[in-house]
Amino acid sequence: MGKKILNPSASLLPCPIGLITTQSIGGKPNIITLAWMGMISSDPPMVSISVRSTRFSHKLLKENGDFVINIPDAKDLERIDFCGTVSGKNTDKFKEANFTFGKAEQVKAPIILECPVNIECRTKDFLSYATHDAFIAEILTIQVDEEIVEKEGGKWNIEKINPLVYCPPSQEYWTLGKKVGNYGFTKGKINK
Ligand SMILES: Cc1cc2nc3c(=O)[nH]c(=O)nc-3n(C[C@H](O)[C@H](O)[C@H](O)COP(=O)(O)O)c2cc1C
Image (tube, rainbow, N blue to C red; front, side):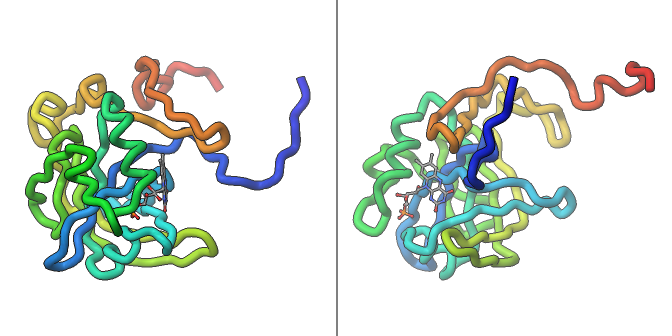
C-alpha cells in the first residue's frame, strides 16, 4: 500500500464543533459555529479559537474578549450549520435558530441552554495569521447538564453529550463512535 503526497492544508481531524457565543458590551448576543479550536494547556486550562477577521464575531470578540464555547448535541445539526452560514451582522441567530440564552456564571456572554456543555472563557492573548486570528483564553467556569456529571470532580457521562465532529478534508460532519478504552489502560500490561 503506497502513500499519496499532498499539499499542506487544514487536515487535522477530527475537529470539535462548538457554538461560540459572544456579546459586545451593551449589545445583542451572537452565535458562531467554529471548528478551528482546541485545548492548549491544562492548568490553568487554556483554549484557543480561531476566527477570520471578516466575521461579525471577530468584531464582538475584539470589543469584549469574554465568550462561551457551547458544545452542541448532534441532534441540533441543522441549527449548528445555520449558525455557521449566516452572519450576526444582519441576523439574530438566537431567534432564527430558536436557541435559548442563559446566564453565564462568570463571563459577559450568554450560554446556550440547549447545549449540554458550556465552557466560559476569557481572552488572555491574541495571535494574528493570514486567514484567521487566534483568541487564546482561560476557562473560568464550566456549566454542564446535571445528568452528565453527578458532582464536582466526578466522571463525565460522555454518552449523554452526543457531540459532533468536523472532518476538514471532506467537509463532513460525523458523530462519535463507541467507547474503546480508558486512558492509560495499557500501563503495566505491555512488555518492553
Ligand atoms: C462546521 C463549521 C465550522 C466553522 N469553523 C470556523 C472557524 O473555525 N473559524 C471561522 O472564522 N469560521 C468558521 N466557520 C464559518 C462561520 O461560522 C460563519 O462564517 C458564520 O456565518 C460567521 O458568523 P458571524 O458573522 O455572525 O460571526 C465555520 C462554519 C461551519 C459550518
